[in-house]
Image 1 (tube, rainbow, N blue to C red):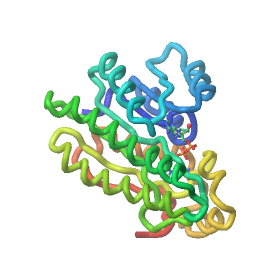
Image 2: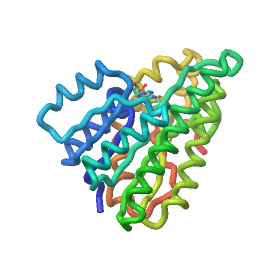
Image 3: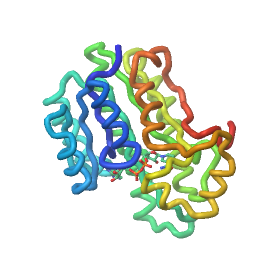
Image 4: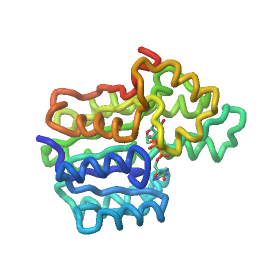
Length: 243
Ligand SMILES: NC(=O)c1ccc[n+]([C@@H]2O[C@H](COP(=O)([O-])OP(=O)(O)OC[C@H]3O[C@@H](n4cnc5c(N)ncnc54)[C@H](O)[C@@H]3O)[C@@H](O)[C@H]2O)c1
């Protein structure tokens, strides 16, 4: 059965916001969290009166994730979808990272999805209820990145996806979306110019990849149409870096 109530992390902008709006248009109830309070308030204002709950929550902080899940599971016990979309890309070579920043990149991109996924599946599995998790990885996690930390964590997201697909079977499907260069996002603005040009050169299809394009692939993985898929990585990349 297609997802009816979904949690989307990092929903205040970029791919997350496009997915929030796609899911609302599809008639779902949406819970989203972000660290960007003004953008979150603007999202809530724009969709006032619709089934959208917004929460200020830093997915890199374990207690904040636990608190968010406490509230969501109390207020929306029928929740059946989770999209681990919030991500942090700094676009710098590995020798420019200090230890605190390394920890932050790992926490946002990997630890948050670990904490949220196990609470989500821990709610559904004992009740023998079906659900779907979608994780956002990147072409960078498959072919490498000029930012080694980002390449590392996004490869980790693929490992988490395949492994949680095993852990959470047979009730919770776990799949990933692997975008290429998604324009109109803060992350695209941080990609070094030479890498931006390389990505564009590698794309086999014309036109830019928009947040809405990635949102549609995420929505497919939440829905009935992908009901036989778990542990899969689907691309949204205009055919760049075939793999
Ligand atoms: N933009 C791209 O080119 C691209 C390419 C491949 C993969 N991705 C992945 O897609 C996902 C979405 O990226 P995007 O381009 O929309 O990024 P974005 O920076 O435009 O949006 C990310 C959102 O997540 C929020 N966020 C960041 N850290 C957070 C935290 N600790 N807790 C809660 N919210 C947090 C931000 O405030 C922002 O609203 C990310 O996982 C990213 O790594 C993006």
